[in-house]
Image 1 (cartoon, rainbow, N blue to C red):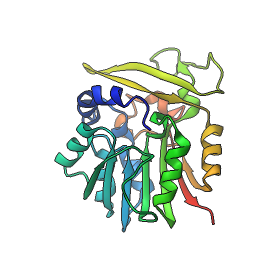
Image 2: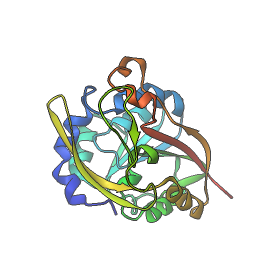
Image 3: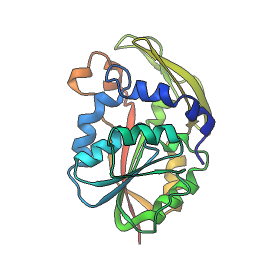
Image 4: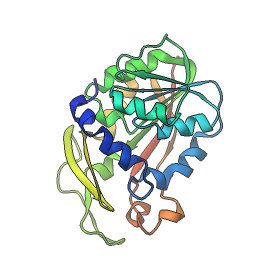
Length: 238
């Protein structure tokens, strides 16, 4: 089940506006790197927690036939209006309305942090993947998630005041260029994700800690020093 569906339903329009503006969300500073890392594809893909559809549109651009899913109807409607995918479904990550072994590629972009029962979601992802399929996971980097820079300067010191370990709830607002976005979900250490992958026999075959594109280098200078995201490609073990 997605953490606090009521929250994401409440902020859906706020997220759609925020996510679609290159001046606000960091996604746009990494989009080119994401396209390069995924690479051209074919076959079927499903996105878990598609939001307004921007990552589904990337997958479609790369050649996949895409199914976009999200538990919030407003998000799916926005994705459909933008022609983000080929098929759509309003559903949680733990109850995908598709047959087993259907997808060549599963995208979980910054969504595992928002899921209360991550193990149930990964179990369902495993069910719908083909035996030779790929799972792509993007996370806010667990190291970055647990600390903060002590100021806005590019060379500001990165400080971690609390323990890196343990699963913690995050709930707060970010502001940028006149817009605000209320985020909520879970923060947890890297080993928690690894243990969950291991339980579902999902093996990491590739890893990236991307840096912002040169066009956004000044705005996101700190993220060129300490990675903001962690990207993983995983495959099913026999």
